[in-house]
Amino acid sequence: MLLTKRKSFNPSRVVKLHRRPHRHQSLDNHPDHISPTRATDQPMDLTKLDLTSFNGSDFKTSGLCSNLTQSHVSYGKILNHKKKQKKRKKSCSYCCPCTPLCVILSMIATLLLAIVITTILIGVLIKTKLSTSTSSEKSTTTTTTPITCNSSCLNQTWISSSGLLAKWTFNGTYLDDMNSYTAIPVNSPTFITNGYVNQALSLTTANNQYLYTSYIPLIHASFTIELWLYPTAFPNPIHHSILGLCTYPGNDQCLHLTIQKIGVINTLYMSFFGDNCMTYNSVPLNEWTHAAFVFDNSTRSMLIYQNGYLIGNATSVLSLQGTMNNVTIGYIPGIVAAYGNNSFEGYIDQLTIFNRAKPACEILDDASLTTYYNFDSSPIFDDSGSNSLPSTSQLTSFVLSGHSSKAITFNNPNTYLQIDDLTELGTTNKSFSISLWIRPYSLAGTLVFVSSTAAGIGWCMSFIGFASNGSIVAQMIASTVQSVYGPAVSTSSIWHHIVETWSSTNGLRLYVDNVLVASSISATTYLASSMSNYVMLANRPNNTCDYGAIGLQGAFIGDIDDFKIYSRELTIDDVCALYKS
Image (cartoon, rainbow, N blue to C red; front, side, top):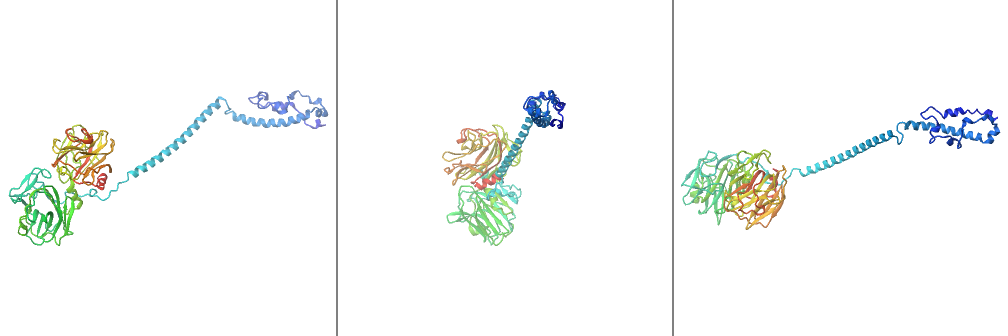
């Protein structure tokens, strides 16, 4: 009964199900995936079964029904498994493990993944580098922040030739450089060859020698009168006259600039007669002294400077009055009645008259800037300082890419530039400073050579140059050569600022690029030539001189710009101002 109610078992259906159209024709072809053993747990060939020969009890008794029931369950599982296998085969049709296609695709995927990872890493590295570069740029910006220097006369500017009325250089002539006020000599004054710059006017009291010229507009006006003095004696009881414009000795009617004797000292003196300005700094004998007399008509201020520094000031009730008389040099006839003989004894050089009141810093520059070559006037070498020192050169040329505008270049072992008439540098124990910008092609040679003769013999030595190891060296001579060492600068296109200073107070100092890199406080004396010196740039003419740590270094190969010599010790703020300029 059970058998008649149950649907007849059709073995062909099983075969049909197990033989779906596919590239694999039977389950026997896939024993690893699906097999009758896995479905019934016993080997079974359903196509050979004759179910009609069994009755129900036999069916149950034999356990076949149970096996068939289990086979039905297993058959359902087989169908589900087949569906999953079909999906798996479908996916595997693209790439089955260990097949050549899959291996190739895997390699391509691995390569693409490596490219992606590499790209990401490069991006991270670039970002890091950019960040580092930004930090570096920020650091560079910090280090190149505009330098702030404290107060210095060297960071101020003015037009030095503005308001120049007259200038007498006294180089064997009484002519005014402005061709306006030729001086007339009285009682045959002469010239000396070793003046402050080249020649100078020589006057003697005994012969009452002096000069005069036509009226110069000083009445009711501001003015500045500057000159170099070298008194050889003070023979007069009160005054030794420098310059005068005197109508008569009445209130504000008589300008007289003199060296006045006060007790045992002789000092610079300025007076309109009645209104006057006195000082108490002694003017030395047999030594060049810079004197400046300033009157500011807007404030009625009377100012006196000695060697660039203010030593006296006063206020006048009125400006200079009087009539348009002659101006006299070395003697003032109008004050003879009041003071007696007042002739000057000694030498006068570089006398200038301006129609304006010069500021203090300009006067300091006039007094202490011995020479200044900026090399901007190619092909002519001109001293841009107030002394206009002459020079000679050999095989030199100019480059346009100087530190400031143009520069001089030395590219031959025989090239040099020699500057004449540096009087201050030849004065024993006189403070000095040497400043220049260099762009070396090699770290060798002499930068600044000083001698008492044009041939480079006599008193001579190298002041600035390179040691054998390429270090910058600055030196001077006391009883022996005193040297200090700086760093070895780069030989790239970068300009470097070099400054050497000396004073009896601070000794020898060397600055490189605005940094004090070396000093010798024990170098407290400077044994100079006591003559007007010659300064040679970029070479030395012989090897018989004191060479010190610079050694037998010959020519400097490279560029030089903005060469300056001062007759004073530059301060740290001065050096900063030069470096910043």
